[in-house]
Image 1 (cartoon, rainbow over the protein chains, first blue to last red):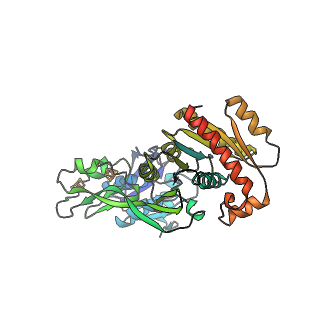
Image 2: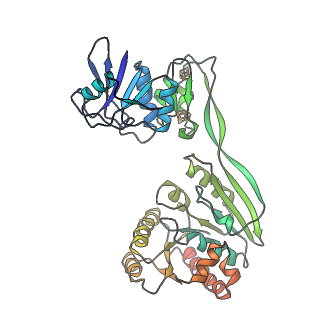
Image 3: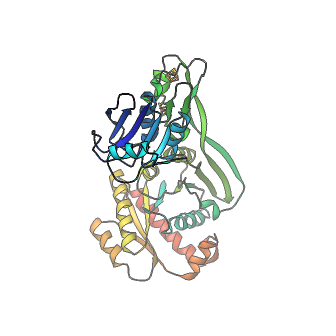
Length: 111
Length: 283
Ligand code: SF4
Ligand code: SF4
């Protein structure tokens, strides 16, 4: 399964970015391979429509779970339509930390 | 001649000035009053009357779900994030679409054709002799304010005398309204906030080459802050409206001041004479 975590940097030790559409990086974690694959969000500084465009990146990469701070209205409807589950992380820690908390079932699901 | 009444922000009395100016001028000659504050048009509150509606349409893609193979080209092309392609269906966000037609061009399956959708409307009325009111109304959640403004102005174009109530702010909608106008009346309040918004709006008029003059509203006789700015920028102060409870009350009730207070009529006529003189001379 592929999990996406929004991140301020390309490494799993970098802090989680709480904004979805404007996140500088998306870290894709493949639970079978166990690695974190960083993808630069080229829409982070775009003028408009960042949420849906970023959501398209997740869909194209086959992510099934998204861990982030918050997702705006349009992006959320896209993500839900695509069947991706969203978990909220707002502890200010690293991508690693968010992932561990997700595995332990400590993160709340966004409706 | 086209005159724009602007203020840089809402709540300064801009609409009050536009409504009264149009009301007194209508006694002299035909005038078209255009409400360009399409996100919150309220001139009609001063002039209740029966209206005719015309829709404002924008281009949008229509997807042929049979032809579409969900290749995702259209979503990659759209600069506004209006399309998202899933494996089984496409999602389209009409209020984010700018109608550029890019998706139609790139679709390899010919699955997109451009259709129309309503983003707003233009309301026409003739509330009193000599006065035609044209109001632009943007539908909720829509972003195409400039498009509705352009449409409203198009209906007024060519008329010898047009007065526009500008949208607040200093972004695209104000630029759309001001561009090509002959004169801009800047309504302000004698406060630091008023001055801040005034200087921004005056800057836009300056860049667009539209001559401007200032009306100070709600004056309690301490307007030095505005006068100093106008002197340094070489913008004339056309008129000062004193702060009076009666004026505020009448305005709140949606009454036209010049109908209720005879002196007001004189003062607005004088303002119009000054504006016409400056607008025609390009001062
Ligand atoms: S480009 Fe055409 S075929 Fe491809 S997903 Fe868009 S509509 Fe479907
Ligand atoms: S018309 Fe332009 S803005 Fe609208 S969906 Fe197509 S590409 Fe995007």
